[in-house]
Amino acid sequence: MSTSNTRDRILDALQDILVGEGYSAVTLEAVARAAEVSKGGLLYHFPSKSALMNGLIQRLKELSEAEFTEAVESEEGVVRVFLRTSLPQSAEEGELYWALIAALRSHEELEEEAVRHVHHVFEHWRELLHRELTDPVLAEIILRAGDGMYMAAIAGLGRPDPDLTSRMIDRLVEESDRVRRPR
Image (cartoon, rainbow, N blue to C red):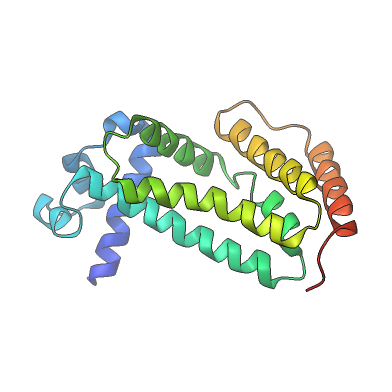
């Protein structure tokens, strides 16, 4: 089995434990067992619980970087991609991010670099929105609307009516199209 496959299996197992049982259930032993690797094999890739959490956050940062690229390069534009990705695509995704936020709040098992990665994701969306729109107030409204939808969804506050959400996104996109910088 390749090193990257083992590493991915370990991170998948960590993610499953976070979603299924919560952050308090994450131990090196539990992750090794769920990934079906020896503890030594786990320690080869991730020498501590902190390294495990940092690895997962690095993986999520890489996924975010792909979203940033899509937002900048697609005809869809930054605003629509940002708002579309502001709603978790599944309950598991929402639960994963909720568990990561809990870990971030505790700062117990995260290196400063991991915290910076998470801050970068949120800050980079802000930069992209402000770069695409000439109206900084509208850029902030869109940022806060997306962040609000995201936080409400992962906190389990329920999703608003899908039709209403779609209309809200369409309205924000329509307003943003009026002040969108030419590409």
